[in-house]
Image (cartoon, rainbow, N blue to C red; front, side, top):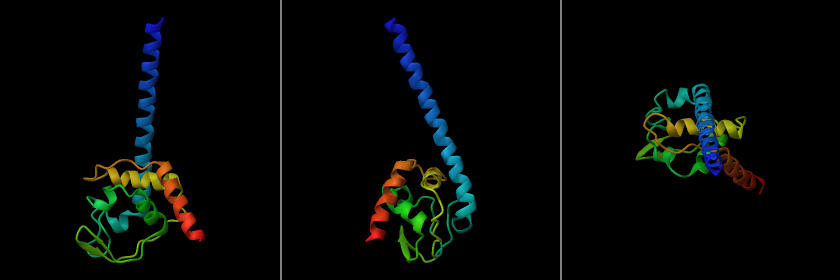
Length: 141
């Protein structure tokens, strides 16, 4: 009997893993749709951006780095400062996206962090929720 119990638990684990992989793939697909409607015009289909205007997303250390909170805030609130990324300067303002849900932000950032030459981790809803909580506290002071 214990032999079958162990196989059952193993089968459940395999099914849960498959379901998780399917959900993650769907999130990246959703993120691609958002990217195509909101980001592509400035950051281009290849994620290369526009020299001296719009920062590239492909291969950018900021995009594949560990500061997910910063990325969330940029997507949500936009960015108006001249910025230096990987030795180059970019000066075009990024439009804020206050209407994007936390799930949509996680999806689009997951797409960006795993597309082109980027091989970073997916962004979770919990990471976006935490970043937005910190942002709300700063805005209420």
